Image 1 (cartoon, helix red, strand yellow):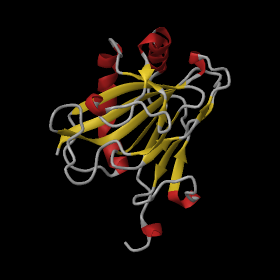
Image 2 (cartoon, one colour):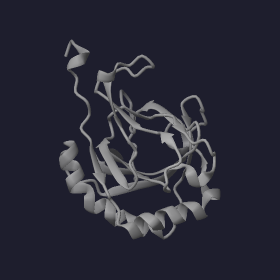
Image 3 (cartoon, rainbow, N blue to C red):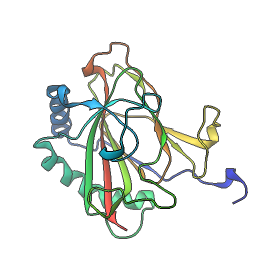
Length: 217
């Protein structure tokens, strides 16, 4: 396409009330009791190539979910067929799921990025060797009353070049609604808009459970 404006926005779906109230409450309770497990989020890929870069990303993450992992993974797996249909992801169903907790306080953000590497000499980037992420999901949860603002998920149209001067037609913003799951193709460019959390208190943060569905390609 010669005209960038012809490139479409990535397909996505937002599922409200994704978890039962008891599961939502259990996830919040786990996070509140394990603040010490969170570490500064890095950029650059897997652990062997990751680095801290606060210009690009500010936030806290952990992959320690304890017994909740066995409780939550089947719920995300059960949702997969409908998520694939809604986002246009075709082919065999992914067999592996990566889960990562994220906590975003005042000033947290993640600049435009992809969830998989692209281009020549790319390497697979999934839960297991030889697998790739094909579908990305973000489950949002937080304490109420809500004590932060911002933190929208911004999805850029394919072939767009994200910048501070991006026009409204270049993207769509998705509000991080409590107890909702947003899914989109892992090759879609996206970012986390800056969060404002005036109290600075951990219980007031915007929390997310990042989920990547992976398969061998």
